[in-house]
Image 1 (spheres, rainbow, N blue to C red):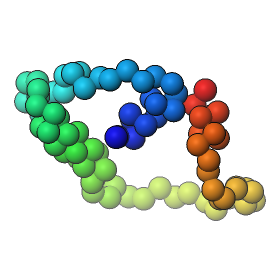
Image 2: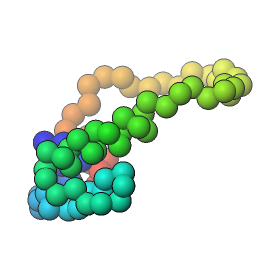
Image 3: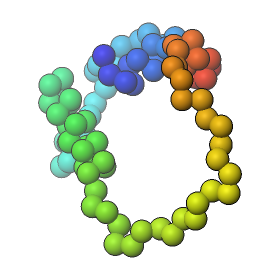
Length: 83
């Protein structure tokens, strides 16, 4: 199950959308499920694997630290946040 499918399941939307079209880079539609997965992988890799920007932003350090709970996250909390 994908992250998208898990999120929809947590939201309570259990419908299956396996037949939705996916476009290849050339604009044609990909129909085979395995090819769809490969295309999504290719798409996200192209977004994530970008070169560093030529100049980095000059961001100053925060004036105060925020109290952030880094403990365990539970399904009920995620479900409440989604709704």
